[in-house]
Image: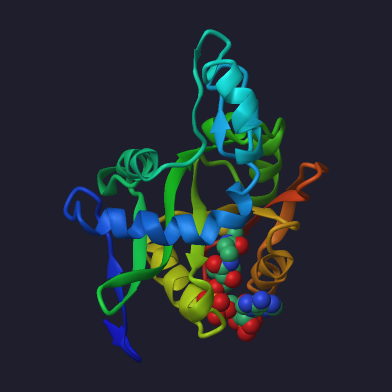
Length: 222
Ligand SMILES: CC(C)(COP(=O)(O)OP(=O)(O)OC[C@H]1O[C@@H](n2cnc3c(N)ncnc32)[C@H](O)[C@@H]1OP(=O)(O)O)[C@@H](O)C(=O)NCCC(=O)NCCS
């Protein structure tokens, strides 16, 4: 599918090992502000350090809690993550927006068991809140990341990616869509979800303003 030189393609990391690295570079550019203060991390205690702390890390031989510190973000770890998460056999789905052979936007999500989601997001009571509001089922459609390179924003690309991904979830008979947002990184995104019928369902009341929004997918049309 092509629109103004932009094409939208359903992406399976198993089928396209070259494009996944191109995708990783697009993601790195989009999340650069988020990872600016985090360069290395300790996998044991989760402490992280910015590049400014390089002399300190050198002084401890880049070791912490008895093991080497690792990059917070790297192309290789992203490729491993995407390969693991985006497995179409488990109902995961990923769409890319491409222009002139380059990835300029992406959107991915997966089906997730409610109890796993509650643990993964560290949101005690989430399963109960969702069941009370939407009914008794075990799996939800979790919208993970969505991003568009700055030069291509406000052209409807995120909306186009999102609706394609959502279409896959509806085809898979998912009844509820859910996502985690930060009011700090993109406050307008919360308004965008609200205008499409998503309601805040869990407020972490943390410094990032993290919030979970959800809606029934039945009858949702973009
Ligand atoms: C959020 C993001 C994906 C939006 O991409 P986009 O392609 O510009 O979005 P669209 O053009 O489809 O616009 C979607 C809606 O948001 C609005 N919008 C987009 N950018 C906006 C901005 N900076 N301020 C206010 N509203 C904005 C649009 O007007 C549109 O609203 P409407 O459909 O009600 O008219 C993009 O800004 C981005 O990549 N941000 C960084 C990553 C991020 O924050 N991701 C979200 C959390 S994972």
